[in-house]
Image (cartoon, rainbow, N blue to C red; front, side):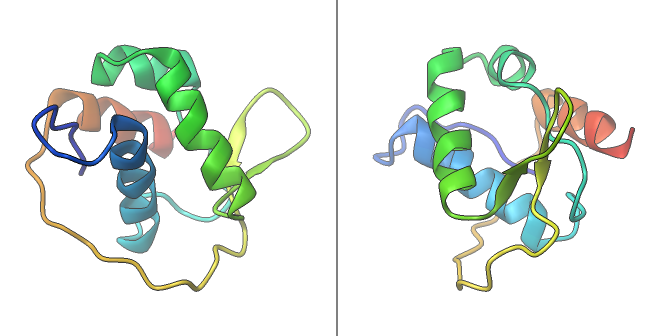
Length: 104
């Protein structure tokens, strides 16, 4: 799914943002599905929770994620139709945890 590459010149928050967009584009994250909490994703990716929060905030502002009634952030029922570049990445244990969380 997506992994964080510290050697990548893109900021980590942008890598997370692109990773979530890719999950949605590939259908691994269905519209309306809960996304992992900031803490859970930060722990899984081994990054600062503020970094994940920034990525989630940008995704919410862009209409990719939506805050719904209840404690969870969800993918938007109508994801934006803006084009994005999908870069192939390797799978990691963190991504498998994200997949399990998304499937629940």
